[in-house]
Image (cartoon, rainbow over all chains, first blue to last red; front, side, top):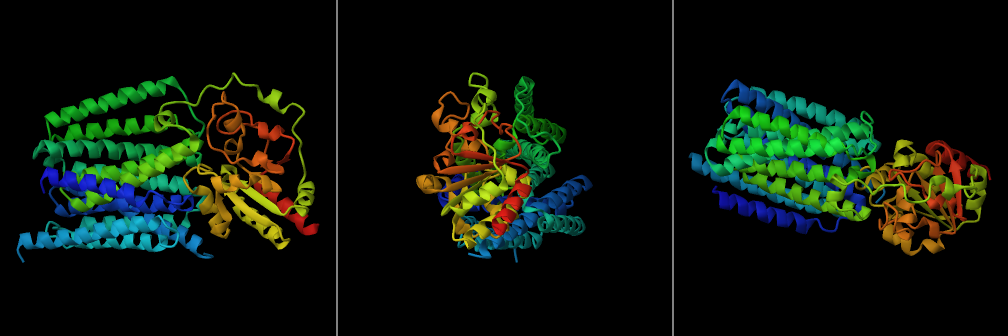
Length: 92
Length: 461
Protein backbone atom coordinates (compact mmCIF):
# COMPACT_ATOMS: atom_id res chain seq x y z
CA UNK A 1 0.00 0.00 0.00
CA UNK A 2 1.22 3.52 -0.66
CA UNK A 3 2.41 5.85 2.06
CA UNK A 4 -0.67 8.06 2.04
CA UNK A 5 -2.91 5.05 2.49
CA UNK A 6 -0.86 3.83 5.45
CA UNK A 7 -0.72 7.29 6.98
CA UNK A 8 -4.49 7.58 6.64
CA UNK A 9 -4.95 4.33 8.50
CA UNK A 10 -2.46 5.45 11.17
CA UNK A 11 -4.20 8.79 11.76
CA UNK A 12 -7.68 7.28 11.85
CA UNK A 13 -6.58 4.55 14.27
CA UNK A 14 -5.09 7.15 16.62
CA UNK A 15 -8.36 9.11 16.59
CA UNK A 16 -10.31 5.92 17.10
CA UNK A 17 -8.07 5.02 20.05
CA UNK A 18 -8.74 8.36 21.72
CA UNK A 19 -12.49 8.02 21.10
CA UNK A 20 -13.01 4.50 22.44
CA UNK A 21 -11.10 4.94 25.68
CA UNK A 22 -11.88 8.34 27.03
CA UNK A 23 -13.79 7.37 30.13
CA UNK A 24 -12.18 4.37 31.71
CA UNK A 25 -13.01 3.96 35.41
CA UNK A 26 -9.82 3.94 37.55
CA UNK A 27 -10.59 0.42 38.71
CA UNK A 28 -9.78 -0.78 35.19
CA UNK A 29 -6.62 1.25 34.61
CA UNK A 30 -4.24 -1.63 35.32
CA UNK A 31 -6.08 -4.28 33.25
CA UNK A 32 -6.53 -1.79 30.39
CA UNK A 33 -2.83 -1.15 30.43
CA UNK A 34 -1.75 -4.77 30.54
CA UNK A 35 -4.41 -5.80 28.02
CA UNK A 36 -3.49 -3.07 25.55
CA UNK A 37 0.14 -3.92 26.18
CA UNK A 38 -0.57 -7.47 25.02
CA UNK A 39 -2.16 -6.06 21.87
CA UNK A 40 1.00 -4.05 21.16
CA UNK A 41 2.65 -7.46 20.90
CA UNK A 42 1.11 -7.52 17.40
CA UNK A 43 4.64 -6.90 16.25
CA UNK A 44 4.85 -10.72 16.54
CA UNK A 45 3.45 -10.76 12.98
CA UNK A 46 6.60 -9.07 11.70
CA UNK A 47 8.71 -11.32 13.90
CA UNK A 48 7.13 -14.46 12.45
CA UNK A 49 7.72 -13.26 8.90
CA UNK A 50 11.35 -12.44 9.71
CA UNK A 51 11.93 -15.81 11.39
CA UNK A 52 10.25 -17.76 8.60
CA UNK A 53 11.61 -15.87 5.63
CA UNK A 54 14.99 -17.57 6.00
CA UNK A 55 16.78 -14.91 4.03
CA UNK A 56 20.04 -15.29 5.92
CA UNK A 57 21.00 -16.93 9.19
CA UNK A 58 21.42 -13.47 10.70
CA UNK A 59 17.82 -12.39 9.90
CA UNK A 60 16.58 -15.77 11.09
CA UNK A 61 18.32 -15.22 14.43
CA UNK A 62 16.88 -11.73 14.68
CA UNK A 63 13.49 -13.20 13.84
CA UNK A 64 13.87 -15.83 16.53
CA UNK A 65 14.75 -13.23 19.16
CA UNK A 66 11.83 -11.04 18.11
CA UNK A 67 9.43 -14.01 18.17
CA UNK A 68 10.54 -14.87 21.72
CA UNK A 69 10.16 -11.34 23.06
CA UNK A 70 6.86 -10.72 21.28
CA UNK A 71 5.40 -14.09 22.34
CA UNK A 72 6.22 -13.43 25.99
CA UNK A 73 4.55 -10.05 25.60
CA UNK A 74 1.44 -11.47 23.95
CA UNK A 75 0.90 -14.67 25.95
CA UNK A 76 1.95 -13.23 29.31
CA UNK A 77 0.00 -10.01 28.71
CA UNK A 78 -3.35 -11.57 27.85
CA UNK A 79 -3.02 -14.21 30.54
CA UNK A 80 -2.16 -11.90 33.41
CA UNK A 81 -4.92 -9.50 32.33
CA UNK A 82 -7.38 -12.37 32.42
CA UNK A 83 -6.16 -13.33 35.88
CA UNK A 84 -6.67 -9.80 37.13
CA UNK A 85 -10.10 -9.39 35.59
CA UNK A 86 -11.23 -12.72 37.04
CA UNK A 87 -10.53 -11.29 40.49
CA UNK A 88 -12.78 -8.33 39.78
CA UNK A 89 -15.54 -10.52 38.44
CA UNK A 90 -15.57 -13.09 41.21
CA UNK A 91 -17.91 -11.10 43.38
CA UNK A 92 -19.36 -8.69 40.82
CA UNK B 1 -4.87 -19.73 -5.76
CA UNK B 2 -2.89 -16.84 -7.19
CA UNK B 3 -0.61 -14.78 -5.01
CA UNK B 4 -2.79 -11.70 -5.36
CA UNK B 5 -5.94 -13.54 -4.35
CA UNK B 6 -4.09 -14.99 -1.42
CA UNK B 7 -2.90 -11.56 -0.40
CA UNK B 8 -6.42 -10.15 -0.56
CA UNK B 9 -7.81 -12.92 1.63
CA UNK B 10 -4.95 -12.52 4.11
CA UNK B 11 -5.51 -8.80 4.35
CA UNK B 12 -9.23 -9.33 4.95
CA UNK B 13 -8.37 -11.56 7.89
CA UNK B 14 -5.98 -8.89 9.16
CA UNK B 15 -8.86 -6.44 8.95
CA UNK B 16 -10.99 -8.80 11.02
CA UNK B 17 -8.17 -9.06 13.59
CA UNK B 18 -7.94 -5.25 13.74
CA UNK B 19 -11.71 -5.05 14.34
CA UNK B 20 -11.35 -7.57 17.18
CA UNK B 21 -8.61 -5.39 18.73
CA UNK B 22 -10.87 -2.35 18.56
CA UNK B 23 -13.77 -4.17 20.24
CA UNK B 24 -11.29 -5.65 22.68
CA UNK B 25 -9.84 -2.31 23.83
CA UNK B 26 -13.30 -0.78 23.96
CA UNK B 27 -14.45 -3.69 26.11
CA UNK B 28 -11.52 -3.26 28.50
CA UNK B 29 -12.87 0.19 29.35
CA UNK B 30 -16.03 -1.03 31.08
CA UNK B 31 -16.26 -3.34 34.11
CA UNK B 32 -19.05 -5.45 32.61
CA UNK B 33 -17.31 -6.10 29.32
CA UNK B 34 -13.66 -6.16 30.38
CA UNK B 35 -13.22 -9.94 30.47
CA UNK B 36 -14.83 -10.31 27.05
CA UNK B 37 -12.73 -7.42 25.74
CA UNK B 38 -9.53 -9.14 26.75
CA UNK B 39 -10.66 -12.41 25.16
CA UNK B 40 -11.61 -10.59 21.93
CA UNK B 41 -8.15 -9.05 21.85
CA UNK B 42 -6.55 -12.45 22.35
CA UNK B 43 -8.76 -13.94 19.61
CA UNK B 44 -7.70 -11.17 17.24
CA UNK B 45 -4.08 -11.90 18.02
CA UNK B 46 -4.49 -15.63 17.45
CA UNK B 47 -6.24 -14.99 14.13
CA UNK B 48 -3.48 -12.63 12.97
CA UNK B 49 -0.80 -15.16 13.94
CA UNK B 50 -2.50 -18.08 12.18
CA UNK B 51 -3.07 -16.07 9.01
CA UNK B 52 0.58 -15.06 9.00
CA UNK B 53 1.77 -18.62 9.51
CA UNK B 54 -0.05 -19.97 6.44
CA UNK B 55 1.55 -17.23 4.37
CA UNK B 56 3.76 -18.43 1.52
CA UNK B 57 6.54 -16.08 2.59
CA UNK B 58 7.20 -18.48 5.44
CA UNK B 59 9.72 -20.98 4.15
CA UNK B 60 10.94 -22.69 7.29
CA UNK B 61 9.26 -23.50 10.54
CA UNK B 62 12.19 -24.40 12.79
CA UNK B 63 13.02 -20.96 14.14
CA UNK B 64 9.36 -20.05 14.50
CA UNK B 65 8.45 -23.10 16.53
CA UNK B 66 11.45 -22.67 18.81
CA UNK B 67 10.58 -19.02 19.38
CA UNK B 68 6.90 -19.66 20.01
CA UNK B 69 7.60 -22.47 22.44
CA UNK B 70 10.15 -20.51 24.47
CA UNK B 71 8.03 -17.35 24.47
CA UNK B 72 4.83 -19.15 25.42
CA UNK B 73 6.55 -21.09 28.20
CA UNK B 74 8.09 -18.00 29.76
CA UNK B 75 4.92 -15.95 29.30
CA UNK B 76 2.66 -18.55 30.93
CA UNK B 77 4.95 -19.18 33.88
CA UNK B 78 5.43 -15.49 34.60
CA UNK B 79 1.75 -14.61 34.20
CA UNK B 80 0.59 -17.41 36.48
CA UNK B 81 3.18 -16.99 39.21
CA UNK B 82 3.47 -13.21 39.48
CA UNK B 83 2.19 -11.65 42.69
CA UNK B 84 -0.37 -8.91 42.30
CA UNK B 85 1.82 -6.52 44.28
CA UNK B 86 4.45 -6.93 41.54
CA UNK B 87 2.09 -6.01 38.67
CA UNK B 88 3.71 -2.60 38.00
CA UNK B 89 7.12 -4.10 37.29
CA UNK B 90 5.63 -6.92 35.23
CA UNK B 91 3.69 -4.53 33.00
CA UNK B 92 6.85 -2.44 32.67
CA UNK B 93 8.83 -5.48 31.56
CA UNK B 94 6.18 -6.61 29.05
CA UNK B 95 6.15 -3.09 27.57
CA UNK B 96 9.88 -3.37 27.13
CA UNK B 97 9.67 -6.77 25.43
CA UNK B 98 7.11 -5.46 22.94
CA UNK B 99 9.36 -2.49 22.23
CA UNK B 100 12.52 -4.48 21.60
CA UNK B 101 10.64 -7.00 19.43
CA UNK B 102 9.50 -4.12 17.20
CA UNK B 103 13.02 -2.70 16.95
CA UNK B 104 14.49 -6.12 16.12
CA UNK B 105 11.90 -6.73 13.41
CA UNK B 106 12.73 -3.38 11.83
CA UNK B 107 16.39 -4.44 12.02
CA UNK B 108 15.69 -7.77 10.32
CA UNK B 109 14.03 -5.90 7.45
CA UNK B 110 16.63 -3.16 7.35
CA UNK B 111 17.29 -3.85 3.66
CA UNK B 112 13.77 -2.60 2.90
CA UNK B 113 14.83 0.86 4.04
CA UNK B 114 16.67 1.23 0.73
CA UNK B 115 13.30 1.00 -1.07
CA UNK B 116 12.14 4.49 -0.22
CA UNK B 117 12.69 7.46 2.03
CA UNK B 118 9.46 6.70 3.88
CA UNK B 119 10.47 3.17 4.81
CA UNK B 120 13.87 4.41 5.94
CA UNK B 121 12.14 6.95 8.14
CA UNK B 122 9.83 4.31 9.62
CA UNK B 123 12.83 2.06 10.28
CA UNK B 124 14.52 4.85 12.23
CA UNK B 125 11.34 5.54 14.22
CA UNK B 126 10.89 1.88 15.05
CA UNK B 127 14.53 1.49 16.10
CA UNK B 128 14.56 4.58 18.31
CA UNK B 129 11.16 4.14 19.94
CA UNK B 130 11.57 0.39 20.37
CA UNK B 131 15.01 0.65 21.96
CA UNK B 132 13.99 3.53 24.24
CA UNK B 133 10.95 1.54 25.35
CA UNK B 134 13.11 -1.48 26.09
CA UNK B 135 15.90 0.10 28.12
CA UNK B 136 13.51 2.52 29.84
CA UNK B 137 11.19 -0.31 30.80
CA UNK B 138 13.99 -2.53 32.06
CA UNK B 139 15.26 0.30 34.24
CA UNK B 140 11.72 1.00 35.49
CA UNK B 141 11.43 -2.71 36.27
CA UNK B 142 14.72 -2.62 38.21
CA UNK B 143 13.57 0.41 40.20
CA UNK B 144 10.18 -1.08 41.01
CA UNK B 145 11.73 -4.40 41.94
CA UNK B 146 14.12 -2.59 44.26
CA UNK B 147 17.24 -3.61 42.30
CA UNK B 148 17.99 0.07 41.72
CA UNK B 149 17.07 2.83 44.15
CA UNK B 150 13.60 4.23 43.50
CA UNK B 151 14.39 7.64 44.95
CA UNK B 152 14.04 10.54 42.53
CA UNK B 153 17.49 11.58 41.42
CA UNK B 154 18.11 15.07 40.20
CA UNK B 155 21.74 14.75 39.22
CA UNK B 156 22.28 17.50 36.59
CA UNK B 157 24.54 15.13 34.64
CA UNK B 158 21.41 13.16 33.73
CA UNK B 159 20.05 16.12 31.82
CA UNK B 160 23.32 16.46 29.94
CA UNK B 161 23.34 12.74 29.20
CA UNK B 162 19.76 12.94 28.05
CA UNK B 163 20.44 15.84 25.69
CA UNK B 164 23.69 14.38 24.31
CA UNK B 165 22.27 10.91 23.68
CA UNK B 166 19.10 12.29 22.10
CA UNK B 167 21.11 14.52 19.75
CA UNK B 168 23.40 11.61 18.92
CA UNK B 169 20.38 9.42 18.12
CA UNK B 170 18.97 12.09 15.82
CA UNK B 171 22.33 12.56 14.10
CA UNK B 172 22.81 8.84 13.52
CA UNK B 173 19.18 8.61 12.42
CA UNK B 174 19.93 11.29 9.81
CA UNK B 175 23.02 9.37 8.70
CA UNK B 176 20.84 6.29 8.21
CA UNK B 177 18.34 8.33 6.20
CA UNK B 178 21.21 9.36 3.91
CA UNK B 179 22.54 5.78 3.64
CA UNK B 180 19.36 3.71 4.00
CA UNK B 181 19.77 -0.01 4.37
CA UNK B 182 23.24 0.17 5.92
CA UNK B 183 22.82 -2.32 8.68
CA UNK B 184 25.60 -1.23 11.02
CA UNK B 185 24.23 2.31 11.14
CA UNK B 186 20.86 0.92 12.18
CA UNK B 187 22.32 -1.10 15.05
CA UNK B 188 24.44 1.88 16.10
CA UNK B 189 21.23 3.87 16.28
CA UNK B 190 19.65 1.08 18.28
CA UNK B 191 22.47 1.13 20.86
CA UNK B 192 22.39 4.91 21.22
CA UNK B 193 18.59 4.81 21.67
CA UNK B 194 19.09 2.29 24.48
CA UNK B 195 21.16 4.95 26.24
CA UNK B 196 18.42 7.54 25.63
CA UNK B 197 15.92 5.24 27.35
CA UNK B 198 18.17 4.86 30.37
CA UNK B 199 18.51 8.62 30.77
CA UNK B 200 14.75 9.00 30.34
CA UNK B 201 13.97 6.85 33.37
CA UNK B 202 17.07 7.46 35.57
CA UNK B 203 15.76 10.64 37.24
CA UNK B 204 12.24 9.24 37.78
CA UNK B 205 11.32 8.39 41.36
CA UNK B 206 8.92 5.73 42.57
CA UNK B 207 5.85 7.93 42.93
CA UNK B 208 6.17 9.18 39.35
CA UNK B 209 6.27 5.63 38.04
CA UNK B 210 2.55 5.57 37.09
CA UNK B 211 3.25 8.33 34.55
CA UNK B 212 6.35 6.75 33.07
CA UNK B 213 4.77 3.29 32.79
CA UNK B 214 1.82 4.78 30.90
CA UNK B 215 4.21 6.62 28.62
CA UNK B 216 6.28 3.50 27.91
CA UNK B 217 3.02 1.64 27.27
CA UNK B 218 2.19 4.25 24.65
CA UNK B 219 5.70 3.98 23.16
CA UNK B 220 5.46 0.20 22.82
CA UNK B 221 2.35 0.73 20.69
CA UNK B 222 3.97 3.43 18.57
CA UNK B 223 7.01 1.22 17.99
CA UNK B 224 4.71 -1.52 16.67
CA UNK B 225 2.97 1.01 14.42
CA UNK B 226 6.32 2.20 13.04
CA UNK B 227 7.29 -1.40 12.33
CA UNK B 228 3.96 -1.68 10.49
CA UNK B 229 5.15 1.08 8.14
CA UNK B 230 8.43 -0.77 7.59
CA UNK B 231 6.80 -4.01 6.48
CA UNK B 232 3.66 -2.36 5.02
CA UNK B 233 1.37 -4.22 7.37
CA UNK B 234 -1.91 -2.50 8.26
CA UNK B 235 -2.80 -4.59 11.31
CA UNK B 236 0.45 -3.55 12.99
CA UNK B 237 -0.31 0.07 12.26
CA UNK B 238 -3.87 -0.13 13.57
CA UNK B 239 -3.13 -2.14 16.73
CA UNK B 240 0.00 -0.11 17.45
CA UNK B 241 -1.75 3.24 17.16
CA UNK B 242 -4.66 2.09 19.32
CA UNK B 243 -2.22 1.20 22.09
CA UNK B 244 -0.25 4.39 21.50
CA UNK B 245 -3.43 6.43 21.97
CA UNK B 246 -4.61 4.53 25.02
CA UNK B 247 -1.21 4.89 26.69
CA UNK B 248 -1.25 8.63 26.03
CA UNK B 249 -4.69 8.98 27.56
CA UNK B 250 -3.60 7.16 30.70
CA UNK B 251 -0.43 9.29 30.84
CA UNK B 252 -2.60 12.39 30.78
CA UNK B 253 -4.93 11.08 33.49
CA UNK B 254 -1.93 10.40 35.74
CA UNK B 255 -0.42 13.84 35.14
CA UNK B 256 -3.74 15.54 35.93
CA UNK B 257 -3.98 13.52 39.14
CA UNK B 258 -0.64 14.98 40.22
CA UNK B 259 -1.27 18.45 38.88
CA UNK B 260 1.96 18.28 36.89
CA UNK B 261 2.72 18.44 33.20
CA UNK B 262 4.38 15.56 31.42
CA UNK B 263 7.42 17.74 30.75
CA UNK B 264 7.62 18.50 34.44
CA UNK B 265 7.52 14.82 35.36
CA UNK B 266 10.14 13.87 32.76
CA UNK B 267 12.65 16.65 33.15
CA UNK B 268 11.59 18.77 35.97
CA UNK B 269 12.18 18.06 39.30
CA UNK B 270 9.70 18.85 41.96
CA UNK B 271 10.11 22.35 43.35
CA UNK B 272 12.92 22.67 45.83
CA UNK B 273 12.05 21.98 49.39
CA UNK B 274 13.55 24.23 51.99
CA UNK B 275 11.60 27.47 52.24
CA UNK B 276 8.75 25.96 54.21
CA UNK B 277 8.73 25.19 57.89
CA UNK B 278 10.82 22.18 58.83
CA UNK B 279 9.36 18.90 59.95
CA UNK B 280 10.33 19.62 63.55
CA UNK B 281 8.46 22.92 63.58
CA UNK B 282 5.31 21.31 62.20
CA UNK B 283 5.31 18.20 64.32
CA UNK B 284 6.74 19.61 67.60
CA UNK B 285 4.66 18.35 70.47
CA UNK B 286 1.51 18.08 68.36
CA UNK B 287 1.72 14.53 67.07
CA UNK B 288 -0.35 12.07 69.08
CA UNK B 289 0.40 8.39 68.90
CA UNK B 290 -2.11 5.69 69.61
CA UNK B 291 -2.37 1.93 70.09
CA UNK B 292 -4.44 -0.73 68.33
CA UNK B 293 -6.60 -1.08 71.47
CA UNK B 294 -7.45 2.62 71.47
CA UNK B 295 -8.26 2.55 67.79
CA UNK B 296 -10.50 -0.47 68.34
CA UNK B 297 -12.46 1.55 70.89
CA UNK B 298 -12.64 4.43 68.46
CA UNK B 299 -14.15 2.11 65.85
CA UNK B 300 -16.73 0.92 68.39
CA UNK B 301 -18.43 4.27 68.29
CA UNK B 302 -18.13 4.73 64.51
CA UNK B 303 -20.83 4.34 61.90
CA UNK B 304 -18.89 5.32 58.78
CA UNK B 305 -15.27 4.33 58.19
CA UNK B 306 -13.11 5.16 55.18
CA UNK B 307 -9.86 3.33 54.43
CA UNK B 308 -7.29 5.16 52.29
CA UNK B 309 -4.53 2.85 51.04
CA UNK B 310 -1.21 3.82 49.45
CA UNK B 311 1.94 2.21 48.16
CA UNK B 312 2.90 1.29 51.74
CA UNK B 313 0.02 -1.20 51.79
CA UNK B 314 1.49 -2.93 48.75
CA UNK B 315 4.98 -3.00 50.27
CA UNK B 316 3.68 -4.49 53.51
CA UNK B 317 1.47 -6.96 51.54
CA UNK B 318 -1.27 -5.79 53.89
CA UNK B 319 -4.24 -6.00 51.50
CA UNK B 320 -5.58 -9.22 53.00
CA UNK B 321 -5.50 -8.06 56.62
CA UNK B 322 -7.06 -4.77 55.52
CA UNK B 323 -9.88 -6.81 53.98
CA UNK B 324 -10.23 -8.68 57.31
CA UNK B 325 -10.44 -5.36 59.12
CA UNK B 326 -13.22 -4.21 56.78
CA UNK B 327 -15.11 -7.49 57.28
CA UNK B 328 -14.88 -7.32 61.08
CA UNK B 329 -16.10 -3.73 61.08
CA UNK B 330 -18.96 -4.53 58.74
CA UNK B 331 -19.98 -7.45 60.95
CA UNK B 332 -20.33 -4.85 63.72
CA UNK B 333 -22.65 -2.77 61.57
CA UNK B 334 -20.11 -0.19 60.45
CA UNK B 335 -20.31 1.17 56.91
CA UNK B 336 -16.82 0.69 55.38
CA UNK B 337 -15.56 2.14 52.11
CA UNK B 338 -12.19 2.57 50.43
CA UNK B 339 -10.98 5.90 49.01
CA UNK B 340 -8.56 5.42 46.14
CA UNK B 341 -6.37 8.24 44.88
CA UNK B 342 -5.65 7.96 41.13
CA UNK B 343 -1.87 7.88 41.64
CA UNK B 344 -1.80 5.79 44.81
CA UNK B 345 0.72 3.02 44.22
CA UNK B 346 3.15 2.60 41.37
CA UNK B 347 0.86 2.21 38.39
CA UNK B 348 -2.64 3.35 37.47
CA UNK B 349 -5.24 1.27 39.30
CA UNK B 350 -2.61 -0.49 41.45
CA UNK B 351 -4.67 -0.27 44.68
CA UNK B 352 -7.83 -1.49 42.97
CA UNK B 353 -6.07 -4.61 41.74
CA UNK B 354 -4.61 -5.39 45.16
CA UNK B 355 -7.92 -4.96 46.96
CA UNK B 356 -9.74 -6.99 44.33
CA UNK B 357 -7.18 -9.73 44.88
CA UNK B 358 -8.07 -9.62 48.58
CA UNK B 359 -11.76 -10.07 47.67
CA UNK B 360 -12.91 -6.56 48.46
CA UNK B 361 -16.08 -6.04 46.34
CA UNK B 362 -15.34 -3.36 43.79
CA UNK B 363 -18.41 -1.27 44.59
CA UNK B 364 -16.63 -0.53 47.90
CA UNK B 365 -13.74 1.10 46.04
CA UNK B 366 -14.59 4.77 45.66
CA UNK B 367 -12.88 7.43 43.61
CA UNK B 368 -11.31 10.51 45.16
CA UNK B 369 -14.07 12.97 44.21
CA UNK B 370 -16.78 10.70 45.50
CA UNK B 371 -15.26 10.23 48.96
CA UNK B 372 -14.30 13.89 49.23
CA UNK B 373 -17.90 15.01 48.74
CA UNK B 374 -19.05 13.20 51.91
CA UNK B 375 -15.84 13.37 53.96
CA UNK B 376 -17.43 15.45 56.76
CA UNK B 377 -19.78 12.58 57.58
CA UNK B 378 -17.02 10.01 57.97
CA UNK B 379 -16.37 9.10 61.62
CA UNK B 380 -12.96 7.48 61.21
CA UNK B 381 -10.53 7.54 58.29
CA UNK B 382 -7.76 5.00 58.33
CA UNK B 383 -4.75 5.91 56.17
CA UNK B 384 -2.54 2.92 55.39
CA UNK B 385 0.76 3.53 53.64
CA UNK B 386 -0.31 6.74 51.92
CA UNK B 387 1.27 10.12 52.60
CA UNK B 388 1.53 12.80 49.92
CA UNK B 389 -1.93 12.04 48.50
CA UNK B 390 -3.50 13.01 51.84
CA UNK B 391 -1.27 16.03 52.58
CA UNK B 392 -3.52 19.06 53.19
CA UNK B 393 -0.62 21.34 52.20
CA UNK B 394 -1.51 20.55 48.57
CA UNK B 395 -4.78 22.36 49.14
CA UNK B 396 -3.81 25.05 51.64
CA UNK B 397 -0.19 26.02 51.14
CA UNK B 398 0.48 27.63 47.75
CA UNK B 399 4.23 27.52 48.51
CA UNK B 400 4.26 23.75 48.84
CA UNK B 401 5.98 21.67 46.13
CA UNK B 402 2.78 19.70 45.76
CA UNK B 403 0.47 22.75 45.79
CA UNK B 404 -2.59 22.18 43.63
CA UNK B 405 -2.32 18.41 43.51
CA UNK B 406 -5.79 16.96 44.09
CA UNK B 407 -5.81 15.06 47.38
CA UNK B 408 -8.19 12.97 49.44
CA UNK B 409 -9.32 15.40 52.14
CA UNK B 410 -9.00 12.99 55.04
CA UNK B 411 -8.27 15.89 57.42
CA UNK B 412 -11.94 16.92 57.09
CA UNK B 413 -13.20 13.69 58.62
CA UNK B 414 -14.01 13.55 62.33
CA UNK B 415 -10.99 11.42 63.22
CA UNK B 416 -8.00 10.24 61.17
CA UNK B 417 -5.83 7.29 62.11
CA UNK B 418 -2.56 7.04 60.17
CA UNK B 419 -0.76 3.71 60.07
CA UNK B 420 2.89 4.44 59.39
CA UNK B 421 6.31 3.23 60.38
CA UNK B 422 7.60 6.64 61.43
CA UNK B 423 7.21 10.31 60.69
CA UNK B 424 9.53 10.06 57.69
CA UNK B 425 8.38 12.16 54.76
CA UNK B 426 6.79 10.62 51.69
CA UNK B 427 8.02 10.77 48.11
CA UNK B 428 7.77 14.54 47.84
CA UNK B 429 10.17 14.81 50.78
CA UNK B 430 7.99 17.28 52.64
CA UNK B 431 6.43 17.10 56.10
CA UNK B 432 2.72 16.40 56.32
CA UNK B 433 0.76 18.77 58.60
CA UNK B 434 -2.00 16.17 58.71
CA UNK B 435 0.03 14.21 61.27
CA UNK B 436 0.02 17.19 63.63
CA UNK B 437 -3.69 17.95 63.21
CA UNK B 438 -5.97 17.86 66.26
CA UNK B 439 -8.12 15.09 64.82
CA UNK B 440 -5.22 12.87 63.76
CA UNK B 441 -3.76 9.90 65.62
CA UNK B 442 -0.60 8.04 64.57
CA UNK B 443 -0.52 4.27 64.89
CA UNK B 444 3.15 3.41 64.39
CA UNK B 445 4.22 0.07 63.04
CA UNK B 446 4.49 -2.14 59.99
CA UNK B 447 1.23 -1.84 58.05
CA UNK B 448 0.40 -5.54 58.16
CA UNK B 449 1.34 -6.09 61.80
CA UNK B 450 -0.48 -2.97 63.00
CA UNK B 451 -3.71 -3.86 61.21
CA UNK B 452 -3.43 -7.46 62.41
CA UNK B 453 -3.23 -6.25 66.01
CA UNK B 454 -6.14 -3.91 65.42
CA UNK B 455 -8.29 -6.75 64.07
CA UNK B 456 -7.35 -8.81 67.14
CA UNK B 457 -8.31 -5.96 69.46
CA UNK B 458 -11.63 -5.50 67.65
CA UNK B 459 -12.49 -9.18 67.93
CA UNK B 460 -11.55 -9.22 71.62
CA UNK B 461 -13.58 -6.13 72.39
